[in-house]
Structures are given as C-alpha cells and as structure tokens.
Length: 269
Image 1 (cartoon, rainbow, N blue to C red):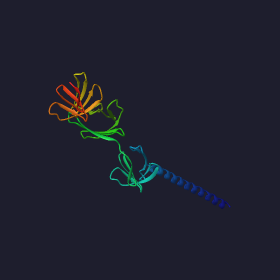
Image 2 (tube, one colour):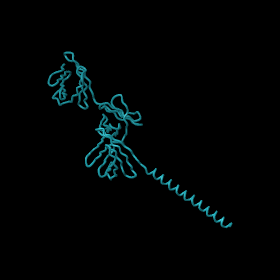
Image 3 (cartoon, rainbow, N blue to C red):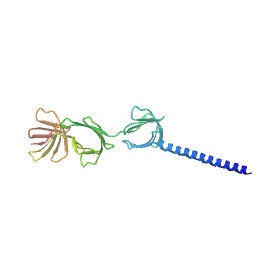
Image 4 (cartoon, rainbow, N blue to C red):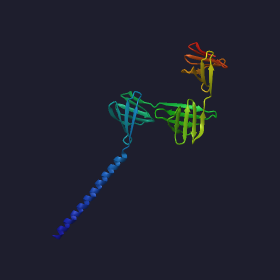
C-alpha cells in the first residue's frame, strides 16, 4: 500500500515538473516569436503630392521588400525590383520608381502620378577667384553648398526679412539677388557682390529717371517717375550705352540719356 502511494506521488511530481518545463518552453517560444515580429518590422511611411494636388501614400516594408500604395482610392502591393539607383517597385498593374524625393507612378504603362522637387543651381565667383556652387531644393527648403569643390555643406532655410537665409550649426548663407555671403563660425569665407552703379537723371520737363546698372550681369533696372520697374538687358553699342527689352530702349552717352517706349521718347535729358 505504501509503495502504491509512493509511486503515485512520484508520478504526480514528474507530471508537475514536466508540465512546468513544457510551459516554460511554450512561453519561451511565444516570447521569441514576439521578439522576432517586433524586430523584423521596419515600415517607412511617405506621402507625396503632385502638381495637380493628387496624393500618393506609400508604406515601405524593407524587410519583406514590398511597398503598399494608396492612390485615387486604389490600394496595391508592389514588390521591390533591382534598380541601378533609387527605388523600383512593381506588380502587374503599377510601377513605382523614384530617386531622392522625386517619384513616378505608372499604371498600365501610363504615368498617373509624378512628383519632382523644385530645384535650382547657382555658381558664384568672387574677386579672389573662389567658386561657390549652390544647389537649392525649394520644395523641402534645403541647400547644398560646395566651396571650391570641397566637402558638401548641408543647410536649412530660415525665415529672412528679405532675400534668402540658410544655416546649420557652423555655416550661414545669406543672399539677395546675385549677392552672396557664406560664413563659417561667424567668419566670412566667401562673398560676392555684383558691381552696381546707381544714377538719377532729371529730364528737361522735370521727369525723374532712376537707374541701377548691374555691370556684372549686364542688366539695368529703371524707374520713370517712381513707376513700375523696367528691366533691360545690355546690348553691344558702337559708343555709349544701350539697353533694351521688348518695349523699352535706353541709350546714353556721358550724362545724357534717352528712354523710348515702342519707338516713342518717354524721357530725355
């Protein structure tokens, strides 16, 4: 009788220990699965708008190599391809390509969405021969600067009272028109200023012609009696000066100037 009781007790102990071990293993498996699920999830969500205000929402799963897009009420999953550069995803209907912030979505061979950041580039040279190359991304408010072909300087747009202003922790770029100044730790490392000449001429009948000559880029801004700005471009004159646009023409020699509009004199001194 005592042996039976002992055997039953031993069996019960074995079952309890076995159950606990199995429970630990199950908990361990669940924990491992949870950890794997958490660490493998790598989702990036991006939204872009095109020139027609159409919206494209994208969710990229870099682990699975898929992109989920939402466009014009459609939801589709695209598979990553091997692009030479940028990104490339597609399925039987859609194809998504992109580089940087620029994106193109194609549906059945036809472009249905296209986003391109507004960009412009400027190269400026100062009197010392230094060259500052600037690449502005107007859409995202950033600028990349290269001084004499050196390292890339990444700058972010700030709110300027006039002109433009970009900065980072070390550098600051300010400019208005063609005039530029780049500072590093508050020390000027590049500066360019166009050669400008400002002249005010008074006509025989009391008219006032204000002129700002930009000799660097060969342009002229003229204001007759404080009116609208007249933008003119330098021409090759046999003697004196000659500037014009589609409507106006300014000729001068010494201190004498004549401004015509559509062939008719509107100012002369």
